[in-house]
Image (tube, rainbow, N blue to C red; front, side, top):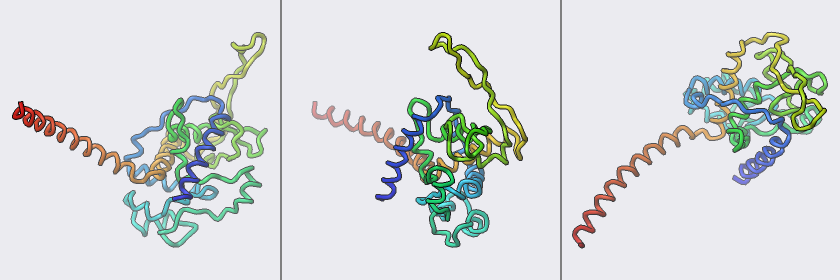
Amino acid sequence: MKKLILLLLTSLCLTSQVSASEGGVAWDKFPTAKLTDVASLQNGAKLFVNYCLNCHSAAFMRYNRLRDLNLTEDQIKQNLMFTTEKVGDTMKVALDPKQAKEWFGGTPPDLTVIARSRADIGKGSGADYLYTYLRSYYRDDTKATGWNNLAFPSVGMPHVLWELQGQRTAKYVEEADPHHEGKTTHRFAGFEQLTPGQLTQVQYDDAVADLVGYMQWMGEPAQNHRVRLGVWVLLFLSVFTVIAWRLNAAYWKDIK
């Protein structure tokens, strides 16, 4: 529990640092229907294990919790477990933190609650941020990794999904700065595709939505159950309120 609290506090600190470094790009809305689509969550788990779990851990998530996504232990072991043989183990990585810091300039953060920690009241939920971030990469030869990101300028993480999306560059147009007379500014004018990916743009957006949906689910696997239970609780309280109101009226009628 202490480790989880420390992780949440660390994530919140990282959130404020990220918000300060972001370029002000508007966040796209994450399709929330993905959170109740079991097939989508299963695909998101596959993408997470294949593309994220190489560097990032999910140290507070156990593989056997994937049974909540209608996966059997055999399916989990055969398709989603590459770093351990025990289905009850947590999702850790073998990457040495010291080497990671040398390669990327910082240790890749744990992703267990990443979707919950990246929320911004003024912009949207953490899922909105991740959905925008993973779709905003572009080629930039001035960066050490060869990649940059609109949602997180000068990000240290390379574009791990580039084979799926393909390579593209960002286009900017020069225009007068409305806040400084005589000066010009560069405005983002869209992306230009350099090489095609394994997926079309629509398919890539859908795959990213699956991945983000899984990370949102991973932060609170019981979320859907909690929401369904909450609806029944509210219905019960509504009915009980009517009963209590009538009982109250009957009681005071006799007293008067």
